[in-house]
Length: 222
Length: 261
Image 1 (cartoon, rainbow over the protein chains, first blue to last red):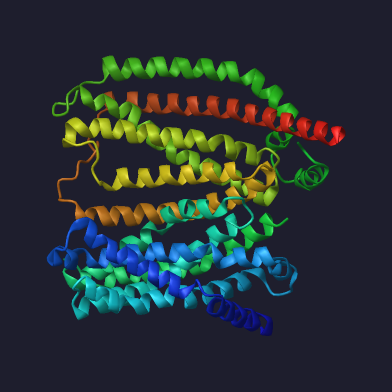
Image 2 (cartoon, helix red, strand yellow):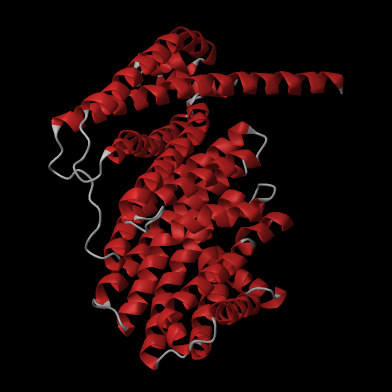
């Protein structure tokens, strides 16, 4: 248990001190959201309508950006070998790493949403809905990404392959995240149904992600 | 390509698995068996296609609304079935790689991936060609089409992952994990895409066949499905043979390089 706590603290400290993690993700998020109006025009009514979708796409891409560093850093400096040889169960280790990664890259995106939503002229209710769905949905993105990061960590050009492998698997999270956000604003249906399915998706990726990632690391480093 | 530990592991397996699988575990025996089986399979495929196409073009009636374009269905639907069945086969092969370390499992998985991508692509192309006269557009964000598109993208991801590592055994394990994660996720993706499509689509979604499918249509469709399955089996066995031979060439080259050095 102490080793897991130590790993957790180490990952948090590395993410904070090395830089490039949280600020970079939020900056990328800001740029994606700022680019959309240039593409579709400064029509506030339209932006308000598709605002939740823009924020979700931006957060999805921003969370993808940081994924490559989730395990690759440990592989480069050799600490991944130590982790693999250690006594702590690998499934728990990767789950702890994913948690630390989410706190340093996923949570800042959620916190940035209220500010970025102002650009898109969202109403307070909509902002709360998007932030809440992202709070529930980004862990699923991190955990699905964990599998991709573990699969590609030992490959040459793995970083390029990661988005290709991961993005199709994130489609359900995107669908229900945007649907729940829209439901809170205009939607023909209740907020509850898509939101609970989104929660279910996150919980399911919590079950599948660490096991698949641990298996991928064990087989990849053989 | 059967290294010694694999053989020993398989030895422990001998008691539980059916004999047929064990016989096939030896690549040389597999090559000999498929060499004999392939011409027969190819012949059966040709016969089944001849029968299926004859039935589809001359026996099956035109639809009273869709006219002759309904015949695209006889290509489109079996291709979709095979596209999905191929992922199921890859998942079984993935279990074979990870759990039993069957030496031919990853060969089967690797040979199946491009075929699956090919059948899904055929399904998409046939679907959009069919959609042009029916819906007035090549692409509709319909639930079925969209899930087949996602399946196609996932096949491409699997093929890309196969190509990243020069060591087939190592790539095999990574692909096996990805295939199994995909197998868990594909029903979820299918469900969410259907849910999403019904949310966005007007009620006039084009429904194929439904419960009122007539025997004159159903029988040609089934014959075509058998023909496609035979085609898949033929191509798959041939691709597996090629993959085994390719790996032997690679092993020989590595040995040569080691001797030369």
